[in-house]
Image (cartoon, rainbow over all chains, first blue to last red; front, side, top):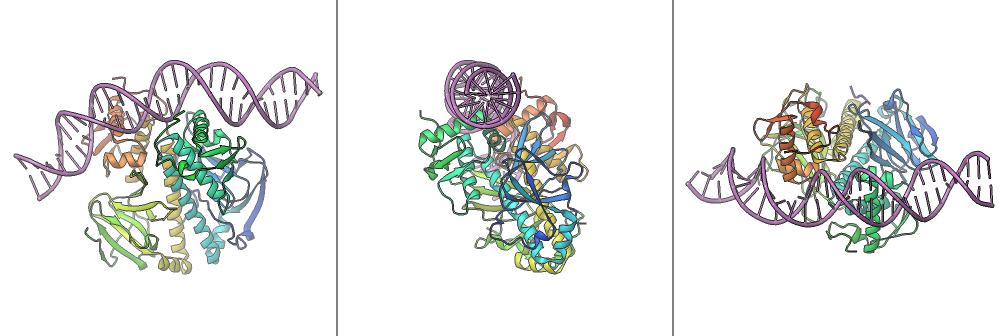
Length: 227
Length: 227
DNA sequence: CGTAGTCTTGAGTATCCTCAACGAGGGTGG
DNA sequence: CCACCCTCGTTGAGGATACTCAAGACTACG
């Protein structure tokens, strides 16, 4: 009855939590930048855990627009859900991305006999829910600046256990755009705006220093450039 | 505020899905329209299953804006995650909403000893993930009309096993607005637009007849009123 | 019948998208 | 070694969509 189909779990906060039990049925995979993840015939057959690097889970709309559903970072679990008629896919974002793969039937059997494993799997699913809920909150923000600001804060928290001021973006502007459902140009402009306001400082296109955390959470101030 | 009336579980089932095993530790609760769900002191202590009616899971931003994270319909599991510093809450939307409540420690123990229960819980979590992912896709749509159209289609599929043309909205325009991250006025205008296009027909403010399914998926046509 | 909440419509403004162009960096091949 | 190509990132101008403010119907309910 509990079918593994129609879902796409993943996880969070694997750091420090033992995955020893899981390793019994894990397969290590390494991926190049842009390399697709998953079997084409049966996307739901596997479950994945990001070990290092980053990956994107995306859907391609009939009109050709790509939308990023989930950004997978080390510690995150995920699977490929064949939701509806949507075409789901996953790709590595950075070079040398390492993933653990679990064949779902085996993992399920292991979970049935080992509560430790079952807890870990369920925790992974719950973490995915929390991640998606936070992303929904980000997409619900009013202005593009708020979205980008929230994205940077979220990324900082997920990338480093004890958040520092520096964030290295593992993704391109295009990925950010598809993740936040805004255009690339708007992403670029928002970053420029945030910089002019003194909220962040660019130390390279992919390296951001967070100067004023409150200004990033620009729910408080509803202003724009001010040039 | 009236408290939900609790009594011991009687013969409730969720949408044809067997919850027999779960009933052992279930508490039935009935809620009035607008009545809050969950303990205020420890929001994460319980897990809920919607039996009948509808509920909304929402977050209130510092600026006072309310955002609906998840729309809970019969068959949906949910919990109140205290994500970050966000204030999460849940409320019944329609009168006579019935929920099953599970005390989490008990449910966890039950799942450890009973794989059936464990599978059911995991399935509930996966369904939540799938639901949130679909919602992310909806929020990623470009125009407000597309969002409203997708919302109507989604609602139809979730409300009736075999989708008919008629959808009875359990939510107000304000709820739709907070769910789709657009303003109430835009929701109203979009519905009017869809009606003028012949995609839907209003048979009352809360009753919609879906006439042209393809037109609702208006990713294809990017036009507006044309008045 | 009045009040409150819901739903709709209008007018004006602001944000964001599209189209376009330009600069920077990294491979590749002559 | 340099030219070339490609992707990425940024900025500008113009137009379209959605928001805000405002007001008017409709419904439910006491």
